[in-house]
Image (cartoon, rainbow, N blue to C red; front, side, top):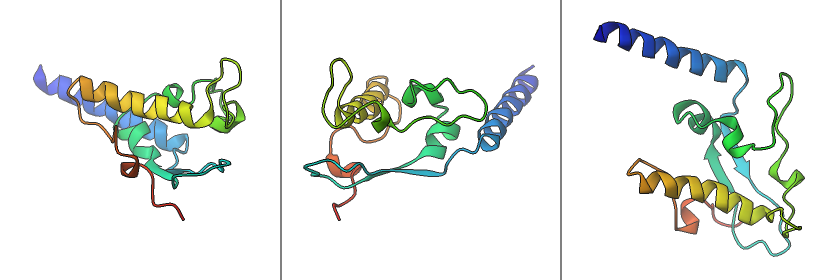
Length: 127
């Protein structure tokens, strides 16, 4: 019985990985927005690790993407502008709330996570 469960999980994992590769998951993403008063350098993250290894659902970050075949998610800056507009969070706050919020939640659960407090753990030196 245990053997079949293991085989089933291996097949499921293989399907998830192959689906991600088939959809063209980008290896690395650089977030480098041009703010008026830019205080920190860009953030570079492994998109592939988040999508494939950690199995973060696309809509966790790309919350307005309908995921229709042949479409790509919009950049965050398409909706989130530098400054807050009405109920739409400003761009920097949206990134911090989404990324750090997820990492802090994992930390609360005692699970491995990425940085949560030190700016330089995510942001590269400003060029």
